[in-house]
Amino acid sequence: MTLSVSRRMAAVTALAVAGLLASAAPAATASPAAAVAAPDIPIANVKAHLSQLQTIATNNGGNRAHGRAGYKASIDYVKAKLDAAGFTTSLQTFTSSGATGYNLIADWPGGDPNSVLMAGAHLDSVSSGAGINDNGSGSAAVLETALAVSRAQLQPTKHLRFGWWGAEELGLVGSKHYVNQLPAAERSKFSGYLNFDMIGSPNPGYFVYDDDPAIEKTFKDYFAGIGVPTEIETEGDGRSDHASFKNVGIPVGGLFTGASRTKSAAQAQKWGGTSGQAFDRCYHSSCDTTTNINDTALDRNSDAIAHAVWTLGTETPVPPGDVYENTADVAIPDNGAAVTSTVTVAGRTGNAPAALKVGVDIKHTWRGDLVVDLLAPDGTAYRLKSSSSSDSADNVIATYTVNASAEAANGAWKLRVQDVAAQDIGKIDSWKLTF
Ligand code: TRP
Ligand code: ZN
Ligand code: CA
Image (cartoon, rainbow, N blue to C red; front, side):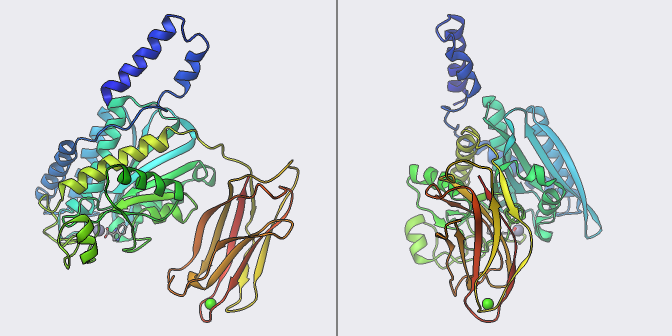
């Protein structure tokens, strides 16, 4: 793959030199990566990183936990690889439980600074073990994908950023710190955040996060292409660093091969492995070592990461758009009448976009109670979310895409929210339309 990249670029250069691409050449170099397929990520390289992380743990009291020497040594290992490959790295520090924590951020020079695609993984382990599946696996695969970007000298349309988070095991501390210190203007530049936490489980499932539809589709397409069935990730939405990004309105997605939950007979049927046994029997324990990895799962997921970075990173960035927002709180009465919050759009011409983005931030103690609609200025309702007695999570923090091309852009748009079941309550915190 590296070869075909350089060959293609050489061909473009040769044609340009020959004058055959006269005016076409600049256009070709402006989006050079558009036709480049992702490389195969060498599993041997990913496993070599895992061996290094295991050695680091072994030499530092058996773990790579926040506040311990093994964590900082893990950061130093990853940083040195990225620095040597031409990334611009920065170490971000924070304090948690009285100890200094570290996030490592690596930027690949180039791409549209107003459209950032980020991939990340938590690098800390729990203190009971080396954390090779949780989460050496995601850390090593993201590292090797970044190194593949460098080997290919990829020229993405978007700006690529990679991140390794500290203190995830203490409650997503590092990734929360990262998003909290980002100014709002920087947050809005993220086209997406891709999270990889546990992707080499020894009795693996193939789970895709059910979040941003475009990101989810990119991963599903990859697995469909290699004939591997996937399921939606349900072992704890919000239990990894993507939640930190999602909570500030950044589109997220990711992959997961399972933790302590048991593999069902149907899952063993389609994926192989052992039914009635946990996806990872060594989850958060001392046996999470280099022997606690399924190579096939690690290989497929590593290639899926590269596929997503290449596909999403080389597509045409969507311009930021004009944002219309209402940040006033509106209380939502328990099991009561619908309430609305209004956003007035003025000064535009024609109709609303076919992909109108509706960003919703509703705080609520049981989101299943809520029915949420977007009302166009003429009163037409677009259902964003239905109620569901089994949807026990809290809050509705999401960006919906609505085909509003039949609606005039200008006028008073409303978010309508109704709580249809007793006990749990909340409020509309803010919502926005992006034209
Ligand atoms: N992040 C969890 C941990 O480190 C593991 C986990 C559980 C997880 N459920 C998840 C990760 C769902 C991603 C998605 O302990
Ligand atoms: Zn963990
Ligand atoms: Ca209620």
